[in-house]
Image (cartoon, rainbow, N blue to C red):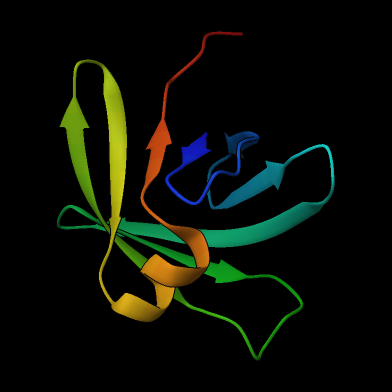
Amino acid sequence: MVSTNGESGQMTFNVSTATYTSPTFSRGFSYAVEEGMLTLDVEDAEDQGPFVFEIERESGEYILVPENEEVREELGELTLAPTED
């Protein structure tokens, strides 16, 4: 995952949870995808989120566009490139 705010790391998705891992920290999320929107809820942090993104597909990658300015300032637009295990 690469963000327009300069951060990068790995985002791993499971059935209903996702984990973001970078060299400096890790963060867990529960998530839902409905009607082209991704909602991330931060686990164990009731004062943050939910973070809502519009999902756009471009050349095999997923661009996550924040739905509001607060999320855009904190996380930026996210680009996810699928990998195979």
